[in-house]
Image (cartoon, rainbow, N blue to C red; front, side, top):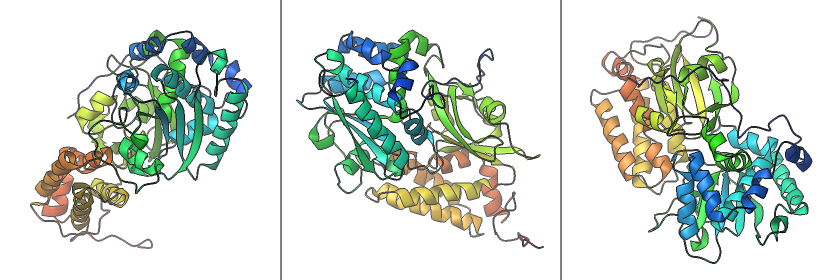
Length: 446
């Protein structure tokens, strides 16, 4: 059901690029960061023309980390060519996925890697102001970011005439609220502007007209951390990791039924089997792997038959999911995949801003149908109705969250259809989890 594509095994399972300094430096001491090659990339960039810096990023093959997976350099050029005396570079550092630790870990363990990347990107694209939008509850991260910004100004890595050049750039930290939809750029812009947090339809993309109508360049914190590494060690070095179409590495948060949960960073294209068993240690006890959900609550469910799938943007998209928030949930043989999909849709329904009819009504209806299935009220046409609702949502939703919202259900239909049918046609939960007709769930003492 999934394309196989094992990579060569002559490499370390993990390669730390974005997390290169994690546990190796004092995140509140800029000298520790400099001692490990920090700000070499910025100094190198300032000796190049802005166009040459963008070309370096293009040669590296860097793609945005998140739902889109689009070319970073292509976005930079669009932003650079946009007209406007004031341009804004934004670091999206909010997380709406409760299981994802990527951004928080980066900002708490190595804020300078992210900040250096933003300054490099600002120089290459002509941005004059930088904003870092962070979850308000990330108190440690915000404290370390603000301390790092002060240290950068003291060392001339930020502010007026950076490193005695004619380049000036300023940054500030903004307290934000983590919402799953914040990965959509227009949703994030609305939140920063203090408006009702909803996506908006614009005639041009944010790089051309975004925050306050100004050209706006937005990347996740992880993407900015890759930028500083690329300029520090070179495009060819960076392009040596990953696959032909997806270069570099990706941070994932492993959770669920796995022996070694936590953060990992692997080259793009690493087989799912290697992530689950070699790095994650496999499933606890004697249980089998039932599925993995990749990309957070809006991510698709892939069966054990997909274990040889290379994990990169293109292969995941073909399999029915995306990188999303970067979390990987391991699900063992005791779990009901229909129940899992219901929980995902319920979470997405609650996270929907409500502006888009397709998302507001579609996620609610899909969650209700799945609830009926798990409680013995499923109908024979429900699977087709779920598929129809899902495809309609993908076509009609305005934001990235809405377009990804049906992935949990569509992948369950694609890979686990027999379990849906068992709930409907036989009133039976194969995992004996759901309280459906004909299934008696024993009590704790029974």
